[in-house]
Length: 264
Image (cartoon, one colour):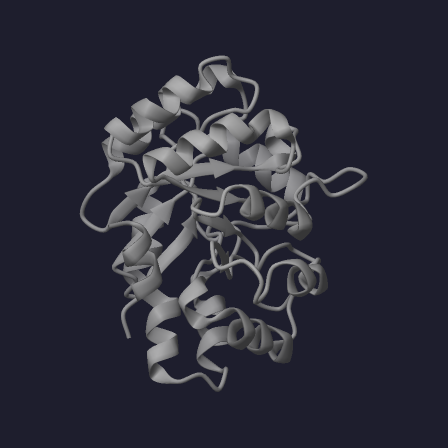
């Protein structure tokens, strides 16, 4: 079986020690790589994962340019990258044009780190521009160790966006919302074909029967294998999916074909 991990993280060597220390302390999770690109490649090689998507996040408007330049520089030889824009950046729309010109494949958002709710109308011009440029958007979905109070990125918010921007390809990570899988079934599954769900770090979090039901009802062509490495070992998500009674063709879609199609 071929594999394309659609949900991975790494940091530039310049910031990796500081970033990983902060994230490990916040999450309480011992990472499965050292956070470097070299460490990520090593983990992928060990598991015979030939392709993977790196999802950088601009946690400040001032970080956009540097992060997107780095993402462009590391692409190639099985490494695919998204760019990132910050919702509060005055030049977010111009940066989307630059992201497209750099050959990056989509935009990564994280509501907890960027302090917004996905269905806020102030972000609609960004989504409209991404739709126009043919860039997909990847959202963290649901609970996060940083969450304080109400969860910002809920499945219903992704459904709201999908309705307004029907041609925008939306990836709702963590099967639509970590710890909100019932809501993902209620608002997304079988209802919005422009929403894809990824399996990032849901092994051990979601019941196998619910995962299977969601895949069958939403369509294997709208589900993506992802791990959220370094915060989980991709082997866990591989085992989780392999254990489900899916047809070989469905597994091929989930494990690599859907991702390749999105990144063409």
